[in-house]
Amino acid sequence: MERLLQYVWKYRLFDEDTFGTTDGVPVTVIDPGLQNTDAGPDFFNAKVRMAGTVWAGCVEIHQKASDWRTHHHDNDQAYDSVILHVVEESDSPVYRTNGEVIPQAVIHIPPKVREHIEWLLTRDTPLPCAERIHEIEPFHVSAWMNALVSERLERKTEAIRTLLDRYAGDWNEVFYIILTRNFGFGANSDAFEWLAQSLPFHYILKQRCNSLPIEALLFGQAGLLAEEIDDPYFQLLQREYRFLQKKYNLQPIDSFLFKNLRTRPVNFPHLRLAQVAAVWTNNDTLFSRMLEDCRLDTLRECFNVSLSEYWDTHYHFRKTSPAKKKTIGINATQVVLINTVAPILFAYGIKKQQPEYGTRALQMLEDLPPERNSLITPFTKAGVEVKNAADTQALIQLRREYCEKKKCLYCRIGYHLIKSKIQ
Image 1 (cartoon, rainbow, N blue to C red):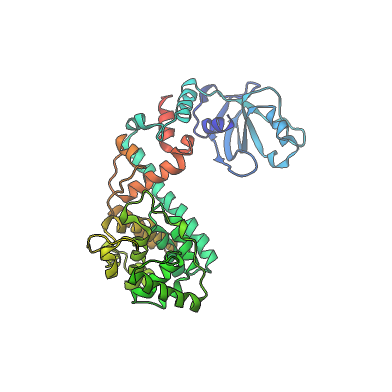
Image 2: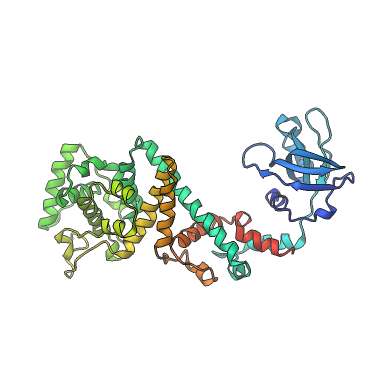
């Protein structure tokens, strides 16, 4: 309930004309203040006018006035700066630690606002507001999506920072790990990341321009060369890996971590690992090239690589398939650009304080076509216009961080829908 009261206060969704203290003093809200997400009063730097005097300080909000004592604020000097105690039910006066009475005001949530908030928060659908999004001006939706795409890149930046801390600021190592992870394409992403973390990048660089040892390292570390298969190429990889494993003192991860079940052949982990090997066989300085030239055509060319000949007739080791030249493909390349290249450019720009890289990352997403997946579909069906990958990344952020977590009160779409009910 307090969260709802805080929301009504923050966005001034109450009747300000009749707002006043419990002892009859009119209160004019000049500025509701900044919401505090840490310990202490709920809002700071608020400004209100009471009895002709402008007061600046903190505002604390409770459902019942007696919660002030229940939460021991009367003995906490951090709350002495509170200039107004806002409550839904005034059942007791409140005091500072020195005994001074704190002005108190009752806030009334308009019935229509309460009704619509409850409607949003209790609907058991992936997109609670789907049937009403069309009521919002496209400008407001577009502005929110612009903020969301940056929010999503910033979230990914946090994961990149964590890896940079772990690997002593080695951007090449971090790029290699993130790139390998994204070749897992969802079902095998975690397994691919664990593989990359078990196989330092400099071991791959030592085998540059030679696909056989790079494939041997990747398949061997994935535990996919441990069995016995009557296949000459498999056995060649097996011998090569055993040599490199002893040379570098490597310990493979468990092969059962990689999933084939309900996976299309083009997403089999064997084929995806062969694609990773092809990338590093043809691009030993990929991260540097990416920083130097962020043009889409140049980046796409980095992933326009051919796999070793064996994979023309295989998706895995146990069975041959009709001959077909295997490539990474346009759609897979787009996923890698969206989930690897754009985020690391954005993170690099922040870390190095070179905002032009962040601008390039956003421009890249705007230049790429929109993604098509089940997370986006409910929005497009609801009438949200999707023009490029920046839009779809924004909607994925909205779906994951707001819709699925029922954080409608923190969503601008939810705000505009609620606000429209009292206008």
